[in-house]
Image 1 (cartoon, rainbow, N blue to C red):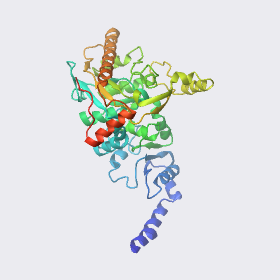
Image 2 (spheres, one colour):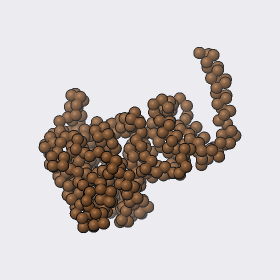
Image 3 (tube, helix red, strand yellow):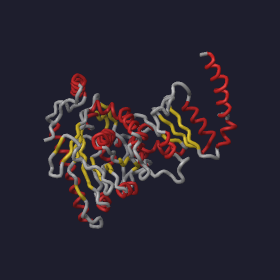
Image 4 (cartoon, rainbow, N blue to C red):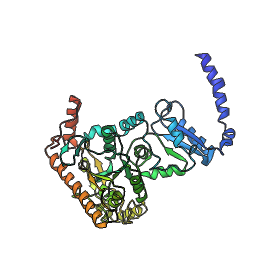
Amino acid sequence: APDTQKFRVGQLLTAGSDVCAESRVKRLSSLKTLVMAGEQDKLLPSASEGRRLKSLLGPNCTLASFPKGSHLLLDGQVNLTSQILSSPIMRSKPLDPVRDFSLPPQEAVERIIDEQVGSFRRLASPLFFSTNPSGSVVGSLNYLPSPSGSRPILIVGNHQFGGLDLGLVVAETLEARGFAPRGLAHPVIFGAGRKNAANGTSSFGGGGGAGGGKGQVSQFKAFGAVEVSPRSFYTLMEENQATLLFPGGVREVFHGPGEEYKLFWPSDGDFVRTAAKFNATIVTLAGVGAYESSKVLASQQQLLGLPFLGEKLRENSAKVPSARGDGSEEVFVPPVSVPKFPPARHYFLFGRPLETEGIDYRDREACRAMFEEVKADLERGLGKLLEARKGDVNSGAGKEGRRRLLVEALEGVKAPGVEAK
């Protein structure tokens, strides 16, 4: 209506412009402030205005930028109370990523899963299995132990090619068992987060993609992932958290032809000693399907063997922070690959619970025996999945995968796979 328009432009807009004038905003620079902006605001330039306010308010201002946020941020998209409580304006000391973490509200969790995991989930048609204490396998996660609060759960898995299956695992455990294992992620994943932190910004909201940008950082953090280090792992165990560890790290993620589903673990096995110190229950997690979902054009070894380029890649890799606690060399050079559409079906098998209670963490021989048992159990799990997959006509990528998706679209249910037996 004309009267409403006149009021908004002539009074509200003018008053708001006066309040946000640079001279008045700068007076608040001595106060701790929180500015929240949705980067997908189609009505007003909230993202650029957030950056402007941040530059005026200086280091005491925290800019919470939401890559998926629209104009109405507080309309079910963001929990304002949670944002305020976790921001510097309410904290006298820095946020501890391990001890101070809590899952977002259920509505936000569902949105993150749908926006960032949903598409891959539909394309990969994953199947999940778990194992009871006697060794029987079932086609559900009924036998995956849940955190009790009195002792930690340590899930130890193989790191699949590309390392993009973490979202599938966390989403399934959340929905089926009601908890999210805290992933230990490579420092590179948090690189964008550290850069934002240095600028006083953070990616609190959603966001997609697996390119190491703000969206990926926010996805991992939303589900409680922390930067891998001996200290963070120790603290997770000490706090009786459910933790997801990939001992093979970058070496397994960037494996070459003929190395798929092989384990490249450090020889010390110190993670077992830490787990035993806190009487953790260890469960192995075997995963297959990622390697068949990409076509490798040039392996890491081929790239490193190229004249001039190989040397440059080694130099760049040396600048990447290592995730290895033992200080061993870590070559961070991804293979050149192209994804297949759709990806191959993914399979996940949780092994039987392995108890560390009764193992003295100072007894290196006992811890070594448990380390070997964990590794052997995971290798058996991989063997079971690879063998069982041969009987699944819907397992492949590309043409076979498109047939699988067509069946699921027509029938409205997941295409038949392998039996738990």
